[in-house]
Amino acid sequence: MNLASALTDGFARDIGVNQGTINLGNQLMFLGTVVLEIPSNLILQRVGPRKWISTQVVIFGLVATLQVFLKNKTGFLISRTVLGLCEAGYVPGSMYTLSTWYTKRELARRIAVFFFGMFGGNAISPLLASGILKLGGHGGLKGWQWLFLLEGIFTMCVGVTLLLLLPGSPDQPCPLLSPGLIRFKDVDREALQLRLILDDPDRKPGSQGMHIPLELVWKTVKHYRRWPHFVSTFAVFSTWSSLMTYTPTIILTLGFSRIKANALASIGGFFALGVVFFFGWLSDKTNKRGLSVVIAHVCYLIVLIVARSAHSLVGKWSRWGLWTAINTLAIGYHPIHNSWLQLNCKEPGERSISIAMWVMSAMSGLMVGTQYYRGDDVPFYNKGLRIQIIMVAIGMFFAIVQHLVYVVHNRRAIKRWKVTGGEKPWLYKT
Image (cartoon, rainbow, N blue to C red; front, side, top):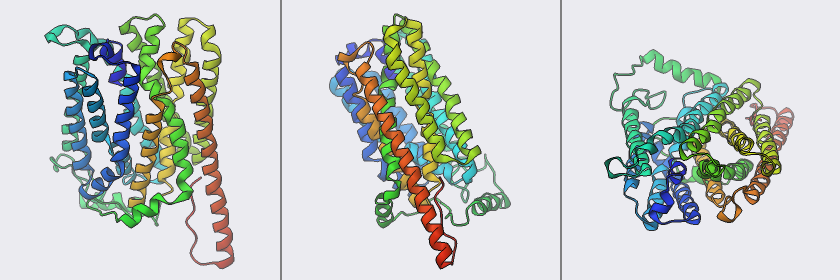
């Protein structure tokens, strides 16, 4: 998100790139993430989240800080690619780690809290940028250089904090560098594991140092009953990419100052946090996972249609309100869709690879979505909004298909069990 704010400070002009190059850079970043997503999760299983996630955050922060020295197109494209490679596996690894700690009825809200932090960072970033950019000229640095420098250093500090505080898994719960800081008695450790077993007796516990065989990776990849999850995620999440990059610039073109545009761009992100938490609560409260996802899609689709129809007919504050509404509802479905997928995985290795595939789908969507808003479509981006409407509709269709796939499978499994008897079949969560 700091790139979006840097663009309002003349970043593209200073390094000699245009909107097409900015879009290409974002595509390369998402491509880097996709390429190493599954390998990164395999490493996570071997070394554990305490080491791997913390290391990733530190390295990502270092590369982000080095963007201060960008001077040309080549440097920009290389930095975006390396950032994507460093980020690969962080999101699925974090969500997998959460899934090893919480029960089925708790998971959606915890995933929502995780994304609350992730999307909250995107909301706060423009607000912080509106102040940081004022440092331009101090120390011989431009405003966007201060932005990359300070946010990169902060990220590295967070990585070091994770080394001190991040627990491993219920069977190895203490942090890596400060095992005495968060203490667990043996009885507490046993209670952590017992509650998960009681919640789902068929669930296999995850632990650090676990090896995932390639046979399980391939089995998970070809599990066709989950493919609608990935298609839906690809389609809908692709719409967020251009919003993430160009919302501050869009608001700037409405006639607001650079500082005010960044501040106003953050409001939709803050509202989105409430939407994310609401749908997480709804999913856990009703236990209707698929229906909750579809409702979130419908809300997003409606506001996109209204915005495209009305924004060329209204004034700048109303247009800002429409763009804010789009950003508010652009991600409400995302955390609960992930928890829906996780709840339908039997064992840790399968869950880890499925999450990685889901994030690969999301990142592939973001990679495609970087081209939705183009220079010849300003200022209303009617073509881009039309594509976003189509993609959300496609994603909603496949979410409904996924729900029906699970329902049909469950009915057939129960019918077969009633005829043959034996152990009660494992059913998908719908």
